[in-house]
Length: 508
Ligand code: HEM
Image (cartoon, rainbow, N blue to C red; front, side):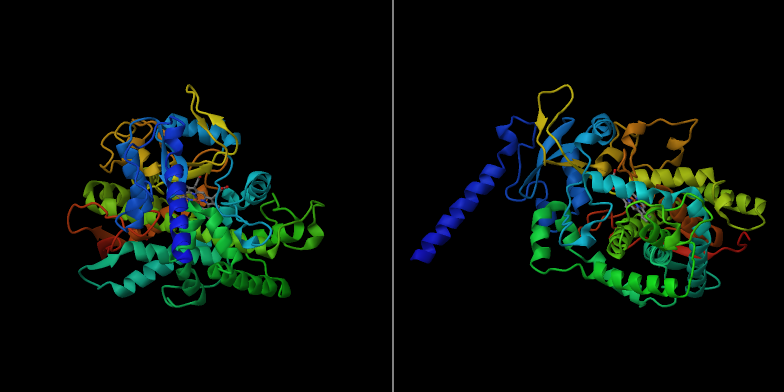
């Protein structure tokens, strides 16, 4: 009897709590969705596995009309910004009121959570300043040959699996994921891997777990729940495994005085000297080059950054290249322009693909720009870090409120981009530019925009060039990518299937 009463009491309290939470926006007379679904808010279709999170947020964007609306992410009231100018105001001019993402972070007990993506306030700012030189063009240029080698291994692999004559269907996304993962394994973790030849290598198996990790979703939606789960013993096994790999590699390099021009080397330099050298020829990690700056960057910090670089880098880079191939294959005129450009530039460079040659392919840049418009990471997130009155209104966003900027909605809104579902790289050509530049944010905007923008662009372009240079591409018919329901980003359901054949005269 007592148990039953207790159960009823708890049930009533829970019901009251949920009702109260879900009246948050109405109590503040804040514009919000009149048909809010209790108890999952605009993520009901995600919980039911009917839509991906990106598409659920896109639906909320399309349904609403006002420049901003109050939404519910499960139980959390959040604000969705629908207006590109207001989004810019928040991300750039008013950054001081929105400098964090509000994701899971436990600096005291979980050092591996202290990555650049999740860190807050001054800790984030300091680390961002320290890591920025790692991604400079000169440093990336020095690392180019590693990505180039991996691109060649991808071509070798495709040459092995394709018939000499005729064509075969290939999941180009899967191929490019392997390419992007090997680049990260190599330049960030310092490994000598070839996942095309050895798909079951230690690094690949370890990171495969991370792609299935539901903790990532919790980190965004319920950071406090993620924190308690970690305190209760739930472990991020991938990050721990990656730390072990890094520890072994660092010890090996230090013991044998090995200097490799990669990001791990630069992070070791930061760990040992407190700074990444501005001199592009200085890759030394010897502590006697110390700058006298306080050195707080440890092995755990290298591992935390390595983990987030993997998460942030592999899918974005491979998607940009794979969706470009897919769209070009559907548009033979554009494909021919892209292939001609590759051919011409390589002819000028004696068939040698180099960092500089890659900079001379403006049409491919337009194609990648257009791909990242049509297939962006679907949303940007921030947390309001002090009470904020939305300019020109009386509405106040309270400190602690999550902010969602639905990029997929904005990038596919005809108000900002005419005929948004048409793949038209020329919309970005300087002579043509008929779009609202504030609405275009594939790498985010403001001080927290993607730190590896250049690296992402170079590696996706390089992957693209390798395919166009060596293979002809076709699709079976006009179609749109179907987005898988089980992801936060834009994961193509069933991969990105195209038909490839070896080019009669590869241009080298
Ligand atoms: C085409 C490839 C890429 C795209 C489209 C992309 C996109 C993005 C976007 C949209 C954000 C959020 C920005 C914001 O909130 O304003 C971001 C942040 C970030 N990205 Fe990328 N990214 C790419 C490649 C990479 C790579 C290769 C790495 C690492 C090696 C990386 C590391 C990061 C990190 C660490 C952040 C957080 C920055 C901070 O908070 O200071 N990204 N990226």
